[in-house]
Each structure stands twice: as structure tokens, then as C-alpha cells.
Image (tube, rainbow over all chains, first blue to last red; front, side):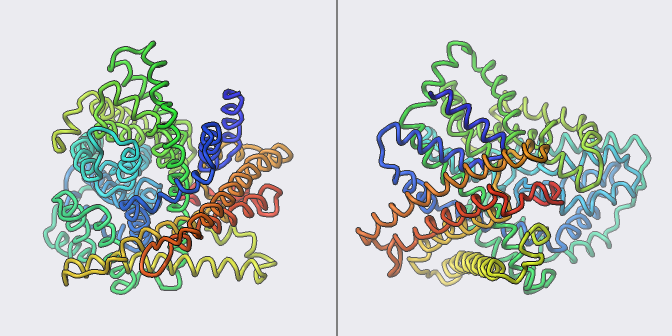
Length: 426
Length: 178
């Protein structure tokens, strides 16, 4: 019977049924089998209002979408270009840094590729970077920055992990700190590759100009305080994540709508709509997952799974290797947020039994997810890039190969070297 | 992008649907504006003037639920709920119709159930009359759930039988989802 239901749900998933409906079904069936009144499913969903940090999700999303619609991406690229453009491979470093910063604020939703790619792609091609390198660089950069505060996936992982009452508990600010070094490692390794790859071929290079740097900084005067105040505030411990989100949303609304006026007020409903469609889609999945998580814990599903897995895998090393492959596959399939919400309640309790720290697990999980965004054949960013830059998907896949292996190396380092994630936390 | 896919923005553009949809958009914009202003204003009040109102926190959490349900309703309207859509995209003709009927019909049934149990939750809370914040009882804040799931059920059902065109069949590329 249970296999029949699982098969039916799998087929429905492949037919394109929304994730939240599938999760809700499992929760309803499970609660029903445990003789609960099913109103409890609705009550669990309503617990969305019990998680204070969730306020950060709509606030950061609207801020990100407003920034994406404004001319902030161009200014960001101009500024980083003025700062790094003189280096060999400098423009590639510009792409990496600006994409990482932008993704940290907008979440890896493809917004980065669409908003920044429009500026960076022509600029890189114009500077005679090979098209293939450019394509791979931008597709990879589309999910870079996932590990930096205040990225939404970090917040959502913390929220989901908190439902599981892990020891030690998982604080959002713990994750923000834990992601810093692994994120920097990715950035630095990709930058080294880009400089090496870019420096070999003679690019059009510019000299550093203090005048241009100042002009670019002045041009971006309203945006510069944002990462400084928000990121600094979060890492410095002055702001709780939800407070940082509130400040960001208000500040961005005022600067974009009232001071810069780069988005006309008549366009605001459209931007709200686009942003909240994403928020709604994520939060209904989360709400349904709240109902499911409780059932999973009640029925001790992770415990039973652990018993089964332990019979086959005794060492933590092998477990982690298997986990990487497993998460890479599902990360590619489930496209980010659903992957966090669906997989964490099942996989995290098992990982903890293998002695993995929940904060370290979060960073590792998100690093693998980040890789999944451009893992062929289904990685979402491959398709966004292919569509955005009008190139065949296969060409994008080939272009991503060197970047894929660099990021895979990072994932392995992050997975098997917990110190890197935990040194700033514990 | 979404505008172009909206089947209503065509010959029948100015019908009841159009009015309802614009009202829905306007409400959502108001909710988001309220969220941004109250959340931001609260911080300014607290840090700048060392004061604040004690009902803003529960109000904000309630706004998150309302924004989420309205966003989810819109996602159902624009066919943007997260799911694996690779296979439906590849199909055409009768297989496509059958697959759509199955997936969207299933979603409609689940939303209907969730709406039903949400009504149950609201009725339970209505009896206890607990206050969420200011003078507003909890059951009022919960109304977003039956409303949201109810509207989503209708939208999925309409798409299941093909009244609403599947966005996947339109010109929307992957960037449309971004």
C-alpha cells in the first residue's frame, strides 16, 4: 500500500503536480493514519505565523526584485569594474564579485543571471573573453553568493532545521557566520581560475583610474551603504536577520522609488506580484512541510531510515560521499528552495546520527545545492542562461565544465573539512 | 512577461476576471507596502526613538501569512508553483491534456481539502475568540487560509480542464519563471 502511494505521488510529481500539494498529501495521509483530526494539518500550516524570522523572506525578496528592476546592477558592475578591472582577468573577477553580492541579496532564483548577465555578458565578450568562458562564468556566478548573508536559502535552512530541535540548535546568525569562509573559498578559487584563464589570453585591459573609481562610487552612493550596513550589521551582531530585512526593504524602497525614481510607481504592482509569487510559492511549501515535519518526527521516520542505512553504511566518510551524490541529484531536480524544505527534515536527523554538526551540514547542503543549480541535465541556471543569452543548452553545459569541477572541489573541501564552516561559529 | 501569458488580456480582457485580478494585484501591493512600512518603521521607532508598539510584531507575522497566501493564489493564476515541469513541457496533444488533467486536478483536490480543514480551524478559533493583536481575534487572521486555498483550488481545477491555458504551452521561456 505504502509503495503504491509512493509510486502514485512520484508519477504525479513527474506529471508536474506542484510540490506543496504533494507534501500536503503525504502529511494528510500520515496524520490520518496516526488517527489525528486533519484540522491539525491546517493548524500546523498556520504555524507560519509562529516563526518570526520568516518575515525576512518577503522583505528581502521585494528588496531584491526592486534592486533587480532598477539600474543598481549596472552601477554595481561599474563600481567593481573600477576597482578590479585593471587586473588580468579583472572583468571576470568583477563578474564573480558583483554576482556574489547580488545573489546574497536576491537568493539564487535566476534573478542574478537575468539582471546582471544583461550587463556582464556583452561587457565580457567586448573585452574579448571567449564566449564559452563567459557563458560558463555567468552561469556559475548565478548561484554564487548563496553562502553569504543575508541569502534566503541560509535563512530557510535555519527555519527548517529549527523545527527539528537539533542539538546544538541552528541559529540564522550561526549559518551566516558559517557560510563566510566556504563562500570566500569558492569566490577565491573561481577568481584564480578566471585570472589564470583570462590572463593567458590577451584581453583588452584598462589601467586603474582613481577618478573613475571615485565617480563610480559616487554613482553608487545610495547602494554602497546597503551591503555595509546590512551585511556588517548581521555579521557584527547588531541586527537580527528579520531586522536587517526590514531595514533593507525600507531603504531600498525609499532609494529606488523616491530618490532615484528608476521604477515608476505604476510598475510597482507588477514588481510586487513577481516577487510575491515566489514568496507565496516558497511559503506554501514551507507551511505544508511544517505539517509533514511534525508527522515525520512523530513517526520517527528519520530514525527508521537511519537503521536501514546503517546496515549498509557504517563509516561517516562513505555516508557523506553518498550524501553528496544524493543531494546533487535532488538539488538539480528540486531547484533550490523545495530541496531545502523537503530534504532537510529527512536527511538532517540522519546526518546528525552520523555525527555531522547541523550548522556544518547546512553549509554543505547549500554548497551542493549551489552546484546542483548548474548540474546537467536539469540544473535550472543552465536553462536560464541558455534562454537569456540565446545559446543552445548543450553549449552552456560544455561551457560550465571547468567551473563545475572547481565548485565540486569546493563542495568536497567543505564536506570533509568541517573546521572551515565551524571555526567562526563554535 | 506574465501579462503576455495572461489569457484574460486578450479579447475578453475587460471582463469580470480582469476586474477581480486587478483588485487582487492592488490588495497584494497594499499588503506588501504595509509589510515594508510597518516592519521598517518599527525598527526606526525602536532604534531612533526607543519606543514601539507591542502589537506590530504579531501584526507583521499575520501579514506574512496573508502575503504568502496572496502570492500563492497568484502563483496558481500564473502557473508558477514550483514543481518538476520538464515532462509536461515535452508533451503535446492528448498526452499533454491527460497529464495536465492529472497533475492540476490533483492540486485542485488537495487545495480543496486544505481549504476545508482551514475552515475547520477558523471555526475552532472562532469559538475560543483568542485575540491575536490589538482588537483582532486570531480567527480573522486565519481567514487568509480558506480564502487562499479555496481560490487556488478553483484555479487549479480550471487549468485541469483546460479553461486556463498552461503557461508551459505559451511563449514563456525559463526566464519567465525567474
